[in-house]
Amino acid sequence: MAAHFDRRLRKAAVTTTVAAVAVAALSASQAPDVTADGNGRRTTADNAPTSDTPPEESATGNSRYYTDLPPLNSPSPAPTTGTPASRGSSEAGIPATVLDAYKKAESELGRSKPGCNLPWQLLAAIGKVESGQARGGRVDANGTTIGRIIGPQLDGNGFALIKDTDNGVYDGNSRYDNAVGPMQFIPSTWAWAGRDGNSDGKEDPNNVYDAALAAGHYLCRNGWDLADQADLKRAILSYNNSQDYLHTVLSWLEYYRKGTHEIPDGTGSLPVGRSDDPATGTGSRGRGTGASSRPQTPGTATPSPGRSPSKPPASGGPTEPGGPSTTPSTPPTDPAPPTETPTPTDTVHHLENAGATGFSAIAGDTFTKKISTRAETKAGEAVGKVRVRFTVLGDTDATFTGGEKVAAVTTDASGVAVAPALVAGEQTGEFTVRATVIGRTVPGLDYTATVTERVADALTRTGETELTCTPGGEFADPIEVKATLKGAVADKVAVTATLVKSKDDPAENDKGPYFKDADGKTVRTLTGRKTDANGLLELPELYADDAEGTYILRLTTPGGAVLDITLKVAKAADPTPDPSTDPSTDPSTGPSTEPSTEPEA
Image (tube, rainbow, N blue to C red; front, side):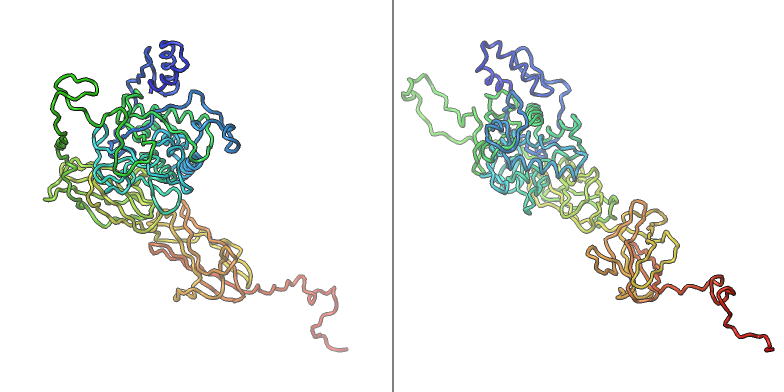
């Protein structure tokens, strides 16, 4: 990185000394937590943050990345319309579709994980160093890259060793994994981190909307708060475990926070330096993920800059330039492939259920049983020290403890990995938890789990006023009930209210009191209402038709609670005469009409 700055500054530097001093100052100012010595070499503090995320669980597999740093002058915010000159250089801008993907991902994470505080500028910074903003915004109208962006194969030769996990589906390589897409996910990580960011029903690492949302969820796992500097650094290092990577991303993050603007798709500039290029001077060869600036053919690796594909054979003596060698030539032979010592992961043949079955919990509760899996060889022997990934799949809001849908656990000496406890959400129904071996392509093992509705065993009415109404009128007093379970408040319990024909006939009545739906139509069965945090539920207004009589409103809940409420519809009673105002009894209003009992004269 310092060498990269040196190349920029040499153009204007008068002497080598001036250039070195400038490099030191700029490196210290643009890369957070980085200082420079008198020779312009970068140094980091002894307490520099680190990551314990293994390469096969990182986003990128710790592959290469672009090392270019931001321009020396930060941009001022500019409008998204106008001429290109009015919006600044393409290096400072972000292609329109790519920028839209980052901002939509920030908005979604703001709703689903508000405590993470993910800024879209962080996604932009990572997108810059991973793929140069999808190769300068070369995407189609749906946000899918024009040509796949594929990093080098992770074969252990200058990079991490990650054997194929997707049968070449994403990277076209059936022997090793490659980082793919604008955010450079390795297939094994995409398998659980992938998201559908543009609602097209697919999770495609080559789509910038899908990849940006997946990157956001990846950075927001483990309960990290990205407004906290320590958590921010942990998240970035888990994406690609390199101090140089951390400082490069933080530099672009700061740059974009000071202002950027939208540029047309396909007009962005491509970075130059890569972390596997000795000319960049990063000293972190093989520890980042910058993809090639050209689309690669799936299954092929681009030779790293500065590396010769082969070394010429040694000569037996000096030769004249262009002249024949004095040593007889021998046909080149392919070197024997190195012998790889099998790891515990390599010996895993299958996974077996190692624990309970019948996983069920009430909505909002923690599952009492934990899922456990045993890794075994073909002969059925236990395999310890193997990483097993547990992934929550399906249409559910259930998660593991901590709010994550993915957990990686190492098998113990008996070959068993126990997943964290599952926590049921509010969504009921069945879902799947899949166990897979990290770094090994073997069939996954699926577990079925079920979330049932919250229950109550008792319902009581909070008021005692008799509920009456005149024909065609409206019941004046609202109906409020309270749900309990074993005497305790039962919150978020679904309550069904039905106007039944009688206590003995639960069929819906076709006359008498009724509710109204959103369109004002008559409804005599009400669903979708739940008690609040205090177990209370107030029903909407009740109306009456012209039929007089006594009716029953029946309330029920999952768990067996039943409450019948009596409703009366009757004409208003005729008012009782007040003797004090009855003219027939008032002497001052005239003679009485009653017969006289006096004898005639």
